[in-house]
Length: 203
Image 1 (cartoon, rainbow, N blue to C red):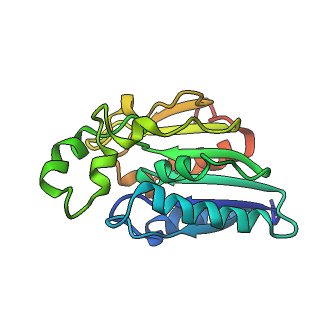
Image 2 (image 1 turned 30 degrees about the vertical axis):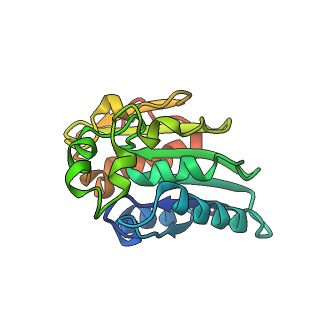
Image 3 (image 1 turned 45 degrees about the vertical axis):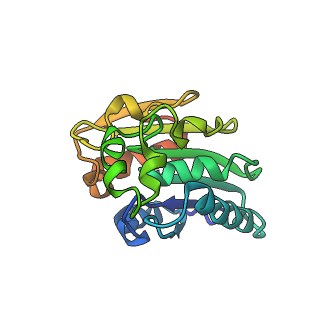
């Protein structure tokens, strides 16, 4: 199916690059979507700083002639950056968001590491599941369909931390925090949600 007017923006996670989303991007390309991968220096800066750049890129894509629909797919920290980017307003074309292993309620591992590595990787403090961390201050998302994919063997973001108020669908897959990125099942789930706004009962 050729969806030249439908763009999917993929946002990578902590200590990764846009290349980590290559397999997923290719799966979406094969299904007819136009993909863009947003890159940022995750070990530097804050969620808010990266979010401002992402918001500008989304606005630029939305202003492109022929852009009918816009979707977001994030991995881990990338989902928090996406949430922050949409805080000031979402493009009118935004329809669906798929979150892969999102620390929507923070990560206990980030809380443990922050006192030791927070100086080198400041965003760890924002990722912490401590009540005062930045993840708990992010505003709710606009009225769009949100699908969340959690990983059964994720030791960084427990399934309970992936839930988000207002999520449209939630599924758990047999994967780790990293292997969701190259899982064929996850690829099918992402495509299905972007097409239909829900995950299939079986895949």
